[in-house]
Length: 70
Image (cartoon, rainbow, N blue to C red; front, side, top):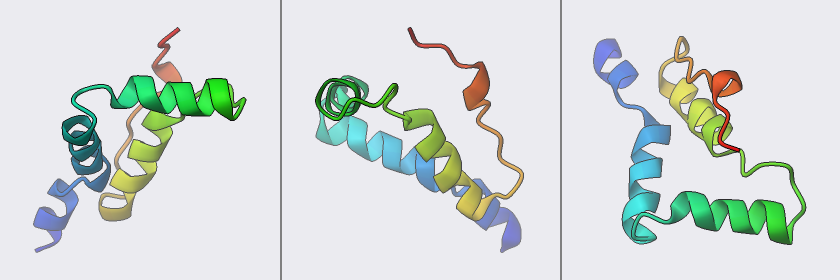
């Protein structure tokens, strides 16, 4: 059962859900809201995904520090 729980990555599932709901534009919408409207430096999508994936798999490392989008 523990192996099954580690395979379930909530952040990845949530990302796919958002992609379906927003017709593939979830990154663009998140960036527009976070950066343009709220004034943050990033939308923190990778960090959210990494945190949610760590809820079920403590060793998960999404390597968000190495990703440079812009």
